[in-house]
Length: 134
Image (cartoon, rainbow, N blue to C red; front, side, top):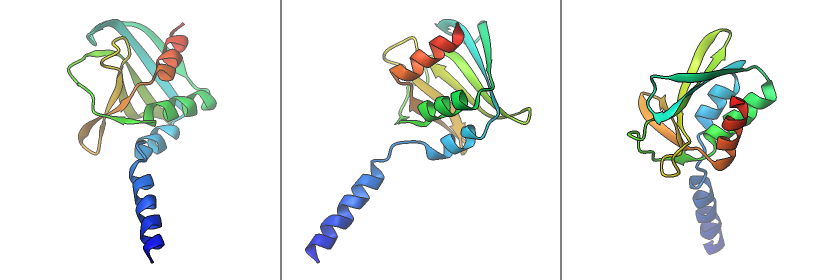
């Protein structure tokens, strides 16, 4: 009986440690295209310097996985370096802003269930966003 409690406790701990945002991943993984706006890089959203459209399913899935990988508590006063707009059948299904040019403020932010939420922008995600900009 004691072993059962230990096993049950271990399962609960492992499940609660799952820090991904599965709802977001499921939502954006079903998109058929993504528009990425790159801003000037000073944290303001007023100057778009580049726009990239992605229609490749593998690239969308990889981007979705990177965005939803790890929940975060972000400082929403950091500003933004760009935005992502996920589309399905020519309709926006999710808007996501990102900050990647400040080591203390690397995050994706978006509205989910009426709340402003964030996930961590990893170095791999930053590398992907920078390579897509070229």
